[in-house]
Image 1 (cartoon, rainbow, N blue to C red):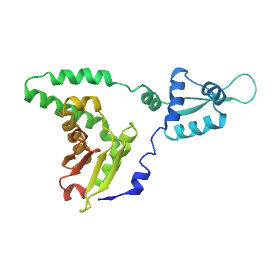
Image 2 (image 1 turned 90 degrees about the vertical axis):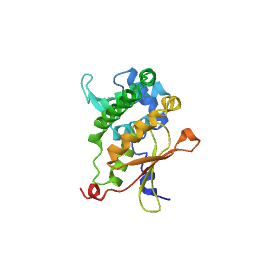
Image 3 (image 1 turned 60 degrees about the vertical axis):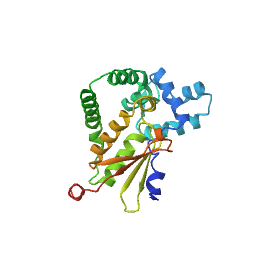
Image 4 (image 1 turned 180 degrees about the horizontal axis):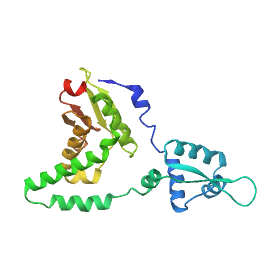
Length: 226
């Protein structure tokens, strides 16, 4: 396979550095802070804080506001955007585990599979507005940007026939997948619907592979020409 290095080099464009997470956590505890206040709290220089803030503002997680204090020029403070609040507070692991345990307890296989299919459809509805590509290649790159923004690293490749290959380098649902492979089926159905092509899971981390690999089973010429 030949790796599209240009795409892979930019796949972390929306990734948050570990050092930047400290800023997000700090602003989650205190609604708005100045650069100087953050520098003191984090025990780093104001320059280091500004570098982190510039990255976070560029990614849409933090915004700058003017806070007037008496006479003179207003002081600039920083606060989380709605996107930033979701980034710092999106920890639903325990709830997801509890809900999936309830799904696994369903004895009727048709009912269980039907529910999983509806969950996949609901996820597609949530993500569809962020997938804008006109063909499978472009939609896969939109999908990569979407998941990288959620801390899930994806890698794009092409097979010897030029078909897109999607490598999921870290499982979005590690605890769930270890208990029930139905999660893999859910993810495959969701990817296929968002990309607009049938896909197969050719390699899986649960089988000892280095990553989960999703390949297009075919390129639909009618869909590609839309």
